Picture 1: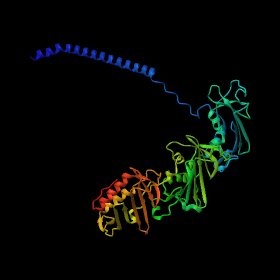
Picture 2: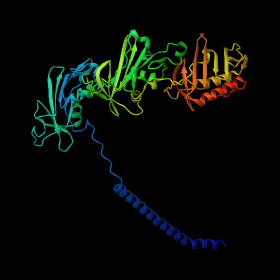
Picture 3: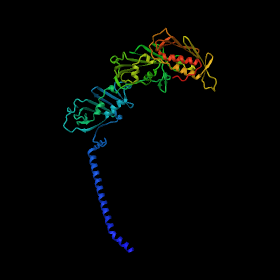
Picture 4: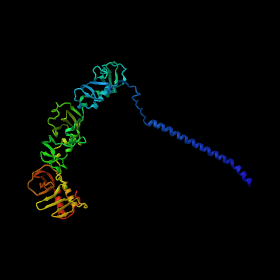
Length: 501
């Protein structure tokens, strides 16, 4: 048996070998096909990439590796002065303590960062190339150049050059050094730098009130925060608006300024003017380095003029409209006329277009509970009187003890009522001086013994006119007044009041 099986295995072996060879051939053939497909994909991908993907731009040659020709290389410390003659005239720049100024123009009127860039441009010029093709000085516009410049160096030697017209192919302008006959092509930006007029180099900040020892108490952390008075006049002000310090020490804690003229009002939005006086106004340039053109730009009759007084010193800003987006500006600290661009959301435009009522405080009731001994509301039919004392019980959550007709009322409810009252605000400062009609009076009995009163008289179905100590101030919503009476009545009758908002 064993021999039989041995023979059988020998008989089958050649067939197995043949089968394995066939499989191997088949596998090899499959691999070849796969390789061919992969190679086709790679070649095809490369073709598509080359065909459809944009070629990378070559990086521009760094200046250090380019063929630029250095014509001038002077640091500012190697220059004493630069004189430039261009379409606007002649400008002479001189250096002093590291800054550059313009002859004939007061130093503080100059933007020294801008003048420094002019001097740097004049002292550092590179050529794109030398013009080797046949070209005359006249062809390059150098016989009557657009710009002529002269540099006085620190060693008292002089370098001068001129810049002619632009290249016809638009890739630069022509340059010639006066001690050399060669003509070069330079970048147009140099012509732009040296072609500026004097007004484009003006300081662009209208100066603020500056601090000095005699008025230092009006400043905090170096910034103006206080004054004695501010006067505003202009086309929207038939009468001058005069703002002074609030002389009521208690009220001044909340509203530090009041309006003295044309009407007596507490003042708000004064911080907008302090931004002018304390921070200056940023301009976009200048119309004039002097004030001879005052009338030409309307500054003799400006849209607005604001003057601040601090002790015996005054500082004034004037603005006159040139068009919807531009104003001419002047301030007393510097006699020049500025060009100021404004926008609808600009604080400058907001004030220029303002009227006196813009500075009126809309608050009707000013005093805090801490200022009062009593608060009283009177109508034709009822009186609601609330006596107020500080709570001596340190274990109590109530800050005050409040009573009406001898009965204690809920302290938190009274605070909610009073918070509602002090949020009453004027909705219209036009007054009708209404004398007859339903009348309501608020009385504020102060700890200093004084009594201030506010009187409300029905002016229409929707408005009450209110007066402070007999002076008509403006109009207020009748809904708010009616709700105040309703809440006061409820509290006087022992009810509790939620926050009234």
